[in-house]
Length: 378
Image (tube, rainbow, N blue to C red; front, side, top):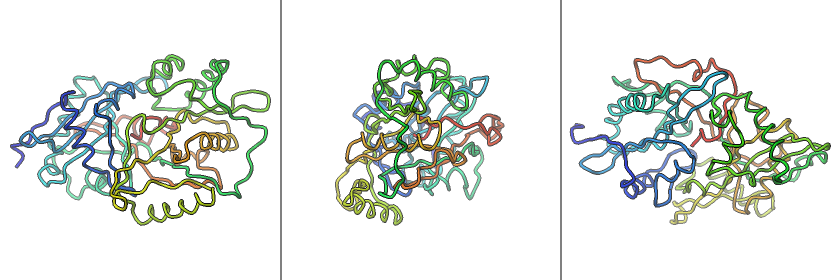
């Protein structure tokens, strides 16, 4: 059945046809979304500043599947692991492609392990995507050679869309303002101190915060918002990043719950409590992107600081943008403040292993150290 299927590593010459195939297949969850990139498909990985491998599955020269791996060196307490982070998995809806994919996937892991010297693999899965959950996490039939998926962390992707008027006032002793050049060293020290509490931190960031941000194509000092105490001490920070810098998220349809939330946000916008969501393609017949800001380096000393930072990020974003950040379900300190208008999507961070290998301790639930989730949920 799969004799005509061939797997190969993609090249830059594949960019145009990759874009077309990638955008044609939506991810199906609470919101069915198509992801669109620039003409250069690989610009996404280049802006993240990470080495990558992209593979295409072809049937008589036509792409019927893709998968990419970001090669990352992540810090776990006193050691570093080289991780292949799986992303951008897209499979055509044909029975042939779906049933044959597992046959090719495990050899990909072993090839990357050998060529890139990876210690392990991981991926993020949206738990509302029933097709992905049924195919990878809870398959009805376990086929020979199918990789094992083991839960490493549960986390939520939170979207902040506004604030109810009865939300308690902001703490007057907390000041949030944009970064000034004089803030550089205190901010570096603040971030470095907090990173020690996390696993999954990029090794380069852990080793040298200043150099990591300076070399990044995604981060910049000028984009930081910093919270200060009454005596001028840094007590929190975040960096809002426009989603359009990486790729566009095009909503195709909303499930009933998401549809009701979208209708509520229309009313909230009229009352000036919040901002509405983009109309889906199913109702507008136009491909229109969701506009949001991803909150990275979201660190704070206590809940009042979190609330002040979220308000500042929301107030300085555009009128059609909402905010997104990821937090572990066990980390109650990062739950949205009371009075926020928000939605949550459950995700899982999974270790992927070939059937003949054991899961590494650091990527298992036995490791209870909080996870640094920036860049992991893509």
